[in-house]
Length: 254
Image (tube, rainbow, N blue to C red; front, side, top):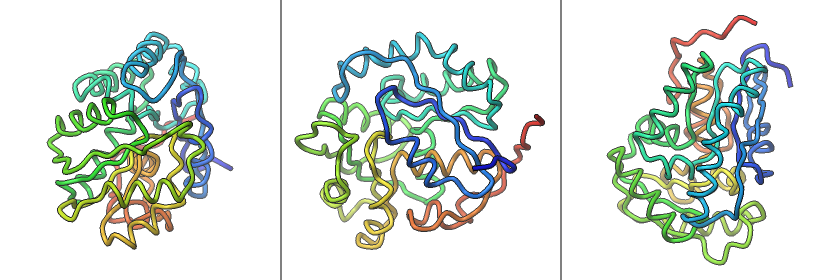
């Protein structure tokens, strides 16, 4: 994988095996992807545990970002939707601004990317499916509503033992179960949940946009660095270049 067009950097949770393989799968020709694992301790999946893990991640964030910045990516992505749920809209925005000033590199989050994708697709009412517990799912709903998104339904995937080992059948079932007739689209939250294999089929079957944290953050990273190449097979967000207008950003000289 060469980087003659751009390098994308991702800050990822320590336990996930999902993000690397999905970003490698989505990266267009000439785009390389690079990763740094954040410091986080404790169990996953509940609001209480996430708050503890997020505090640990944020405590060590500067050093983690500094390590990732050393490979000179053209954008850095906070690849953990749930951390943004803990921070809320204002906290997420403040973190992005601070780290941009610290590194001089554009900084975006998976959640902010999803919100930008809703706007690009014209989605005002969304249904949300998550692999989290009910409290964290409702926290996610509340933060999305801080952005002015109407969440018509927020549904949890039942009996999750490890989000990293969930099957396409279960993820597809979550999409269909979360969907409501009044929803303009469906959002599957959680970068650790494997989603790419179901997005295109689910979108075709439901007749409306279906997107995940993974596809949204890749879409926004490419948009940020001014790459409009279509990435087919994962829904209209990545496939249709009209949703990724040229950026004023210019790649950094190396």
